[in-house]
Image (tube, rainbow, N blue to C red; front, side, top):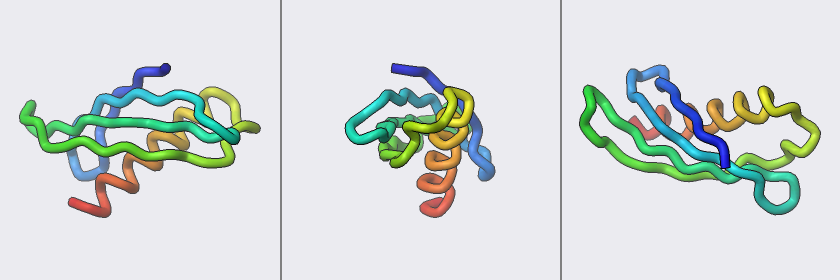
Length: 73
């Protein structure tokens, strides 16, 4: 399990965890806050990452978190 901290393009802070899953995919779960107030949680899966380096996997997870959260808010 890997920990991840970030900020979305629309200003929400998030803490996330991700880990390897079946068939070369990564599962993740993130909790979002704005101004320190809890605003929600999302989870997802990134497929076809078995050939990526660890830094590239981290970026793929961050991109997926961004896409999932920002398109809803």
